[in-house]
Length: 313
Image 1 (cartoon, helix red, strand yellow):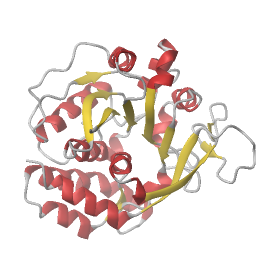
Image 2 (tube, rainbow, N blue to C red; image 1 turned 180 degrees about the horizontal axis):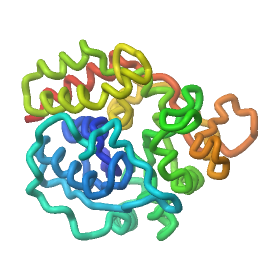
Image 3 (cartoon, rainbow, N blue to C red; image 1 turned 135 degrees about the horizontal axis):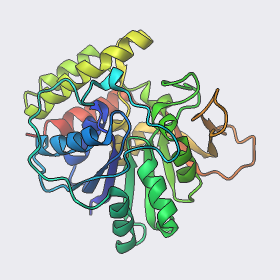
């Protein structure tokens, strides 16, 4: 029986790869809906991009919703300097023909979780946590109904990628991240500590292109575009591939290792705003609210990604 998931996302080239990986794995994952959130770029582009990716995968039946257009308390910070003006620069994908669902994404999350059997739906978050937090604020009862929240977000040992202290997804809406991490649902975090180990080197990108299918060509074009910023920033042989680690964790959790600990989000300091403070050594005695991953098997990850992308059109 495949695991039912909802993907909350701000696509984003690496988000797109994550969505494709999920849609290529129907035996394990049943993607029941995709909800867009403002993040990498504005909500309009993100909702448009989510529909483009669904069509690229040949899965036009997946409903796509638009959620929140801005963070809970702050002005939106975006990352066109990484992802391009559309958020998905690189491939020349056709404009989507499937409609955007009329229901607000937050209401869709609440309605779906309240109507489903408790513990039957996993939330996969690939962007800022605004939609999830707003759903929790509007209907707190959903917290006990969520099977697990698996998020790409945060960093501790690798600290920040948008500021010296903060990872982008958390920094964009730290108040939302704080709400989510206090909600009591099971949480697994795939932070920069893991994603910085999962690098799309030239050899790995070439292997994706050599799959020869449309999805492989599109992923190669996406990552070739988006990685130029990170290659210049880090000086590594490949750029980190962040969001697909969420889906890879659901498919093969043995690729990752970490520990259950307390994670608290900084929401007051301008210097460290959005920092995810992981009590990895259990020195505070605070409630352990998240499984914080620290290491990932890059070769195993890319072997899985190649095998699944090869299944797509």
